[in-house]
Amino acid sequence: MFDNLSERLERSFKILKGEGKITEINVAETLKDVRKALLDADVNYKVAKTFTDTVKEKALGQNVLTAVKPSQLMVKIVHDELANLMGGETVEINLEGKPSIILMSGLQGSGKTTFSGKLAKMLKTKKGKKPLLVAADVYRPAAIEQLRILSEQIEVPMYSEPDSKDPVSIAKSAIQEAKAKGHDLVIVDTAGRLAVDEEMMKEIAAIKEAINPNEILFVVDSMTGQDAVNTAKEFNERLNFDGVVLTKLDGDTRGGAALSIRTVVNKPIKFVGTGEKLEAIDQFHPSRMADRILGMGDIVSLVERAQEQYDEEEAKRLQKKIAKNQFDFNDFLGQIAQIKKMGNLKDLASMIPGVGKAIKDIDLDDDAFKSIEAIIYSMTPTERSNPELLDGSRRQRIAKGSGTSIQEVNRLLKQFDQTRKMMKMVTSSKMGKMAKMMPKGKR
Image (cartoon, rainbow, N blue to C red; front, side, top):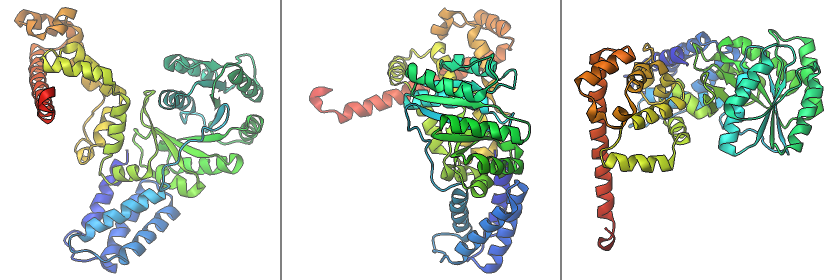
């Protein structure tokens, strides 16, 4: 995500390196390169021009402090303007109403149905909502089945009328169903088309009028660049939607849609989809996205994702096992599962400052854990609980059973042993410090 733009912007800032002060000449040269980088990232031309003109105006009006280099000051100005370009402030979803009604809109293939499931799961988990998913796409044969599978995966009920071809009637009946069964959130998945057409617009406008949603989200595939922005403009003119959802930001996208759409339709980006998994959904934070575009990482989002998977009771149990040097391969599998739930590995790694650029050309995905999991699953339950039992003959059997080599098995066992020792040292050190801080009578 944004890899090419990040590299181009970094090269642009190098023009100012070694300069003693900001001048009209060196700023003009830098921003010429920045504008080209934005256009190559498929940012709307008018947006790119306005952006660089604003940055130039602010840069020339700044006095460079002795402790701050011109290139550093330019990065700060560009960062702030990128954040402003994408909305400046984080905008929350409107969950008022009893029930809250969210209407999903967008073209076919944008990821509406999958996102409906992701949003239901997120609001159920984080906000304690009791959602009802509604299948109002009566044209795509697989749409109802897709939503049904998603609803089962996230354990959220779905309302559908497979024999009906009237999406307005389906949506109205679903609202009554939600009220009768105590659902406080209704997410209506509507039909999309391959292109904007009059029939589609009339239909979704009729659904809007019939159910009066308190939130209309426009879902757009970020990989379609300026086409996404143009489609958003047409939908907004007819629906006056409340917010934008950018899907497929984990793909090979140039980022133009994310940087242009807020300015063109004057509606906030509220969520982004960052992968196929149902957990791969993030609230959109303009400042954090600006950090990532400029290669600064996004530690706050990384910590938030880790906290979502954090189980306090499990953490206490593990700490006791680590302190007694009893951390085993069952615990190790549990930790791998938690990491995988946090999202795409490459996306997670890119949130660490400086790492994104280093791993740009490395194929890093969940397959990285496959050989490790295969080795562990080839162990018996007793071996997983007692790693010290793994002698030469057992290792040979595990290698054969997992389709790996004896060298790979030995390497994993060595790394596991080193990790276990390090974890014990860290835990012992923490407990020792806590004991010293306690009053003598309570030690």
